[in-house]
Amino acid sequence: MILSFRKASQVRIQFIRWGLMLVVLLLWQAAGSSSPKAHFFYSTPIEVISRLFQELVSGTLLADTAVTCEEVLLGFSTGLVAGFALGLLLWWYGSLGRAMRPFVIALASVPVFAVAPLLVFWFGVELIGKVIVVALSVVFICLLSTYQAAEQIESDFWEVAACVRASRLEILRRMILKGSIVMGSPSYRLAMAFGFIGAFLAELISSSNGLGHFIQRSSGLYDVTGIFTGLTAFIVCALIATLLLEWIDRRFAKWR
Image (spheres, rainbow, N blue to C red):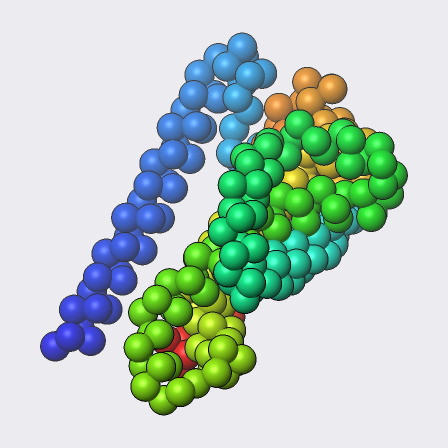
């Protein structure tokens, strides 16, 4: 009975999801086809899909997508590992973590687009500069989520740990490491989205390839169809990355 209810609920969710998408596409198609002026400003989904296939066949969009995905993958991995390690470090040294908390929050509140030009200027316009921009977009989200998860786990289980006389290292190894990954996984998926935003900003500042460059070039030519084509590629890449992280999260479900 419960399984049948869950399957029915999943079907309903999928129906609503795809129904909403269909309604948006139909409204967009109607708006873009209503007049030549509207077509210039909005294009249509049919033209965007057609351009998407044309660019894929030519190989241009695939090359730009590969560049952006490489930047996001390297930057996200760097920011995730650094944020996770720093979050655990601040938890391990509790006084240091409490002292550093306002500074971490202050740094996390600085908009990435405000410092991205400096980072590209300092580290260059090649891959390393863009990876650092992506890593900076990710690192504070991962740091704060890991630190808060570690503190929450310790406060919830400190009595149990005290009863079995577990050392702080054993608490870290048996509870904090695994628990922080599980509790922080939603934040890591959010960080992935910010990683794509960071890559886009870095490519807008200075780049000769990548999806950001593709969109900027289309914008300079007043090519609305090209802009939406680049945005579609961005969205698809972000969705695939998010689904991959959700799959990894399910693999760690036994730790819950």
